[in-house]
Length: 563
Image (cartoon, rainbow, N blue to C red; front, top):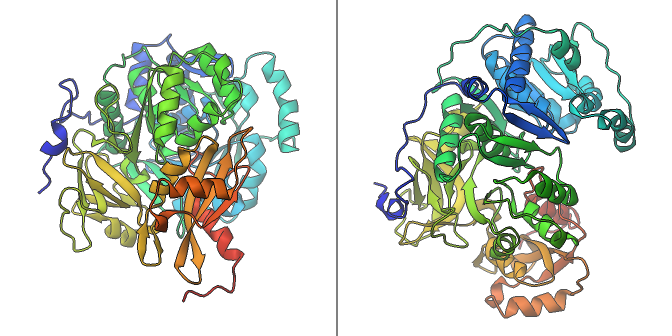
């Protein structure tokens, strides 16, 4: 039996142990915010603002248009857009019409796009004009019936809307002029000529799926995670209670995290819509653009990832910008190095805390307290109504301080994997989600992740957790980014390799780093190989792709056989 007293004793009085979750459809909150704040700014996008009334009006037009094309409850709608007004309108328009949103990464190549469309059975897709050729190439192998095409310039202020096509031509080396047909539909025409009279759909929040969110697919094919309206609403309500100093209708959230990733979708888009916050949307991360935007737009909340914060801290002109508006940042998607946390707090005077979650949990399950005691290096405490335990290989719950697999349970846990009962049964047991992450809980109820099960390095019989070595490397003054991986070794089975990006203007070699690591780590944990790179491969949300680095190493040693 899980003993919650370990962590509940740390909750400040203002954070409830349990929440009365609203059993409503997610889209109903847009309706409510538009009624409560019709003239309030909901979106700022590259110099142009939209009110909550504007967003709701256009979402209704899109919902009505979807239904006029035959969309029925439960039909899947792929949304292949960067952070933009269209991304928000498409998401909520699909939900208003009774559809299930399938968030689709705009960076996907044809093979990845085809797999996701086929697996989800999406019959509608909303995409940018420059992505239409990619969609058209795979369309014949999918169940797509209708493509709605939009342009970034449609939501840009004058004169940016006139200049953007030239920028687009230079960036993508193409100009796309889609024409309306039976299966190609032009966004601008829908918004100019469409009506708002969609037919409301009865939704069972606890059973009906709102979102099919595909996992990263680091092993095998990505899986479609079924998240219900209740899953998503409950996680946003948990988030709001954790950020208890925020005021309804009074916050500004910086939306750098992509909405096609569940972390950005929950902590920026859905949080803002549900509580009347203003969103600043940025279609991609550029450190200088972000710094300028923070100074001008003055966001108060900045959900991010360690690589985003590192990118800003490493900018040569960082000191020129005023970042003092930022009050709170919850960092996710990857471990937050203590050095990065402390440096970012120094330049903003805000609070940066590490959190934890998975696509399968909508996504957040744990976080450090933002304004009270926190434990550096820990993912913090379980959120309200969230149970957590460490499970041994035997299936028994681990004693305090002992390492095992983290399992979590709560209202934000997914319904299951789309059309994949076998995988669902593998990770969901009696309502518990087995995360695949190795960790432990200390005597105060704070949880720690030592690593992914599959990232554990076994070298010469020793277990080595990459995060521990990475934390040491981040303490070196010359290191901007670092990732540790196990690579094949004919003697040790695996050996520890460090991939390192240096800060601008710094020079060190493998001997310098080796000496530094030996002064801070047991000898068996010290990297045997160092590879210096200009950049590291990352996901769209900034998570370093450790597996890709390992695969590259394996390809360079095709004849290696473990001995």
